[in-house]
Image 1 (cartoon, rainbow, N blue to C red):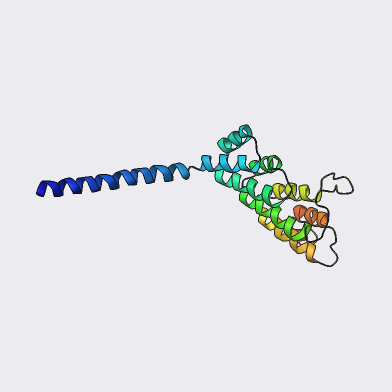
Image 2: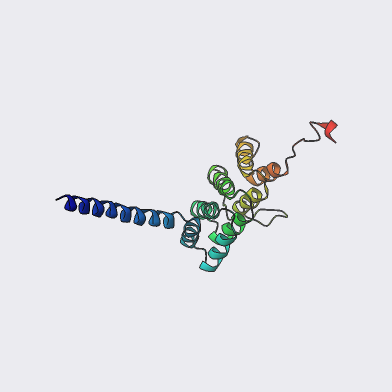
Length: 181
């Protein structure tokens, strides 16, 4: 009887050990950020080769794929264009949020054609300009907040002008702080 009890204890503890091993090996596999990155990028429409290169080179692959997914699902920007921009910034999640915020709050709300070309020297659509200005900004969250705020003023009817103004803003504007020349 005593031997039977020991055998049952060993069998139960062995079953728990195998269950733990199976659980942890699956969770490690599911949590591998490169797997997640590849899966999300290819689901967004990025080619397998581009997804492999982007995920392998990314400092934080999950942030890269999150940026691409956010932009491609929330705007009409292609996943390939989003990947190019998200790959080139140090804050990809902020870039994605910047583009989506400007699109949802300013471009969509103003009922402007977000794919129409902008008049003048710049041949980008307002949406692609949002992508490029958010990418060029060192602080994409600040960029989107600035564009949204400037676009809310009654005098501002052009979101493109707001994007240009916010991107060209200086830390110490010379008109306001002439002693910093």
